[in-house]
Amino acid sequence: MANPTTRGRGSTRRAMSAAARAAAKRSDRVRPGTGSTTVVDTPRTPVPRRLEAPDDASQARRDENQHVGPVVLAEEAAALRPERRRRPVRLCALLSVLVALGLTAVGVLGWEYAEGRRTNAARTEAVAAAREAAPVVLSYDHRRLEADFAAARAHLTGAFTEEYGRTTSKVVGPTAQKYRGVVKASVVAPPDGGAPAASVVSVSPDRAVVLLFVNQVTTSTQVTGSRVDLNRVRMTMTHTSGGWKVSAVDAL
Image 1 (tube, rainbow, N blue to C red):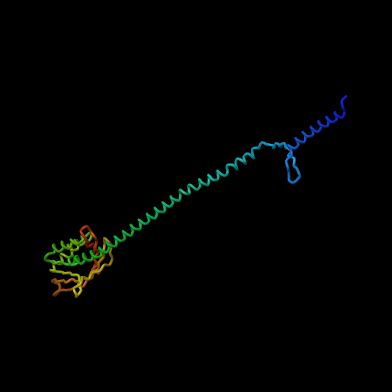
Image 2 (image 1 turned 90 degrees about the horizontal axis):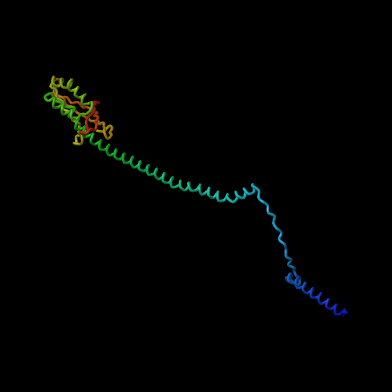
């Protein structure tokens, strides 16, 4: 029969060994805390998250949110690119307009300057031609009428040439021959020997109206001695390929 004492001791040892093993296992799960308090790191079983399939509306909102930024930026960039292109185009157009206006202004000023020079030249040339033409056109001698009338026609132009021819052939010529008339005309000159009295009424590069003071000394069988007529004559001068010619004569 076994010794109860021995059995009790063996049972006690086995119980202690089992307790020690259990304590060792618990020590593996125990980590030191603050102070004397120990914290047992009890493993936690993760709780699975509940996954839900998105509905169509929420998915569409997410897709819109994902793409709204790039789309907006692309639209803004596309809107800016034409604006950037338009700025150089507008600048070029403005510069072209300014250049055109500048060229036009230069052309107008150049034309006005040229016209001014032509007008000044016309003033001088027309007055000189009128002073030269007046004594020839307004003079005649019954002894050489054909030569005098031919010399006068060389200073005339246009319709006035025909008018002069009719007047001399129908009125002046027959009267001069009948009364042996002689008329000598001269543009009045100042006593001090200055330029003959003539002034420009109006002038353009191709036309001028000149006022002259003309003395006509007439002798004929109808007068005793000679008669002096102090006349003011307005001559219209026209520029032709042959120079300045008389296109009209009016006695004032």
